[in-house]
Image 1 (tube, rainbow, N blue to C red):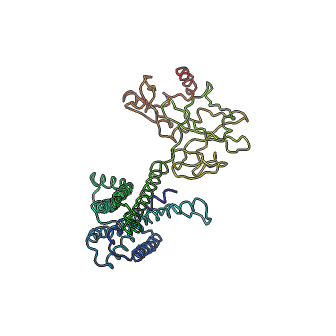
Image 2 (cartoon, rainbow, N blue to C red):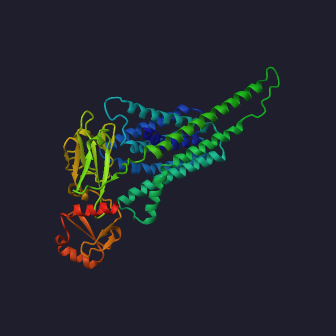
Image 3 (cartoon, one colour):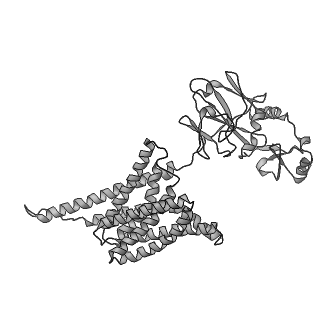
Length: 466
């Protein structure tokens, strides 16, 4: 939900700062707000028309050039504020360009995803209203401040950072369309500019907080009452109260903005991650055996088996129903999204890669984004999974753990990740100490492999561990 606050504040705060500083001499605030409203309205219709014809990228690319022009005009109007109509036109153009950026940024995150008004939609809308209120507060605060070096530095920072972001966006499109060469310098500039542009809002908030503290200089220090009806004393008290009111309002607004932004960037926007799996070994008969009572907590229990070649094969077991024992074992991967894994949340299984919610009773069935089924046996008390069935899923996973392995030809020991040669046979990676062994294995792999060696290997491995 904080995403909606971040999107709106990141896009609209620069607009609020710029128009507050280029229209300081005009008393009719209603006209400024009308220009901003019309800019957003026209931008919405333009975005809707472009989206219907799948031309939003082209529209935004062309509007970015107009936005660059508007930023340079803003610098002129900061010093020259004599014709109100020109400032209003510039306000409209800036609002139009920034509104398109906002619509483009938020198009994949609709507030109302269903016809019903749920609590999530109301909370998301409340965050947008909060961001609007904060931008309006900043607008009135900056508009009421006298021109100073600090406000000018803030204005220049806004122009430079917004210009940097827009140019990076333009260059990225030009490189995608092969209009300009994709060299290291340009790639570095675009990548860094687009990455750090998400944090420019922190710079603006810090400057606004500095201006709020500088506004305390306006306090009248000598407020002693000179008489029974001392009008100046009353004026000074009222003036100081107004200054303090502005200061604490700005301080609260900036701190609140910081809190929401930091929460989003440090917590809310972090990608989902699976918990560390429990590394396990099969028994002497080559089976993984579990007691069903371990899974009656209805949590997802993740396990990992490291194969003889170091491949980490993950699978998990969970109880699909709360009213009775209904365990299911599946690989922690799917045929569509790969091996990023799954988490269980609020009675649903969630694919980390694509965020698809999976109905628990369907877990164990093949197809779609369901986890890949793993063959298992359940006798009412014990869940048993054969080692060969687990190793059959080796190709679904990419992680390889550094372990000691044997060259299948010479039987020499070596570290798998440091082996100079490797060869995949029947989904299993074999490692070799030299090219001669590698070539010898390729001629007749079956000669050096044994389908029944898993159990013997695990017995030896268990003995090594003990």
